[in-house]
Amino acid sequence: MTQAARFPASVATFKSEHGFSITVARLRGLLADKGMTIFVDIDQSEAAAQVGMTLRPTRLIVFGNPKGGTPVMEANPHAGLLLPLKALVWEDQARATWLAIDDITQALVGGYGLDAPLVEPLAKAKALIQMAAARDPV
Image 1 (cartoon, rainbow, N blue to C red):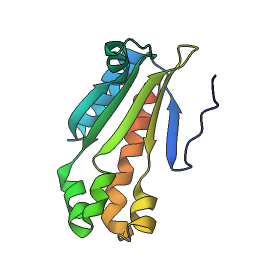
Image 2: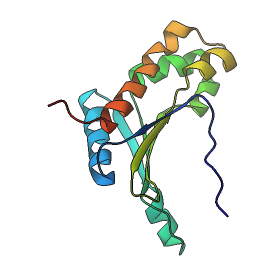
Image 3: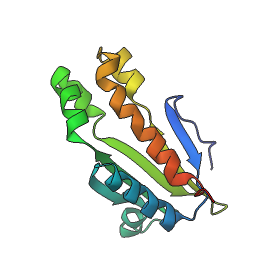
Image 4: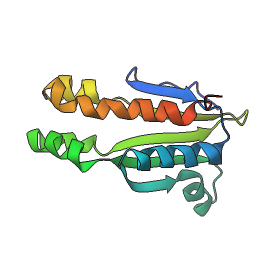
């Protein structure tokens, strides 16, 4: 049984102009170029294969910059439940590649009581995800 994909309004999803492997490489490169640390890159399809299951190519990349995240967690340690940031890259049944990121800034302000200027730098990650999906300018 297949269910329609549902996700919170805070999740931004972008269709990539590139294949799966190139999209992952572009994302990793953009993150590195912006001084982000990639803490872990989880190959979820490989994890599924290890237990005898099949999952289309899917990677969860956990990343961030401690200069941005540390002050947020100092202000409210519970914010560590949302940090570091995460980007999901997957291939759908039609072999199109997608990227998604949860814009956690509203949750940090509304749900965790943090000041908007403190969490504002975290919102820049969404643009990096979108850039990884985009076609290069000619």
